[in-house]
Image 1 (cartoon, rainbow, N blue to C red):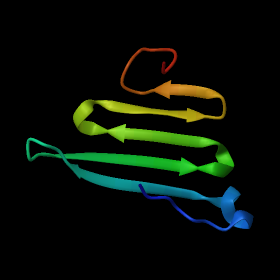
Image 2 (image 1 turned 90 degrees about the vertical axis):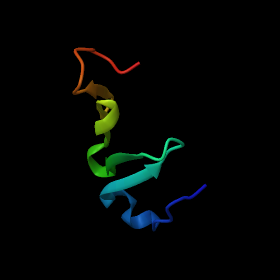
Image 3 (image 1 turned 180 degrees about the vertical axis):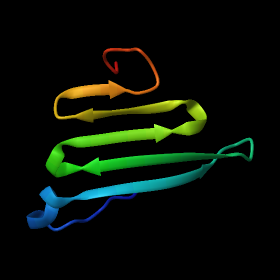
Image 4 (image 1 turned 90 degrees about the horizontal axis):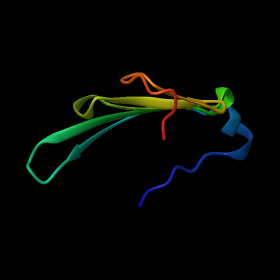
Length: 72
């Protein structure tokens, strides 16, 4: 388990894009992008191989790959 340490006085300015490549059991790789912008209350999770592109802005959820009105 890993965590990110970040100074409290800079936390509201935290805005980053994180990119991960994960090796899975069959030897292939899964690429995941996570976008976080604390000041805008924005979070986005993208995984191309799985067709996933969803996130949260404020108190609203979005899913850019389906017609779903919520992200349950």
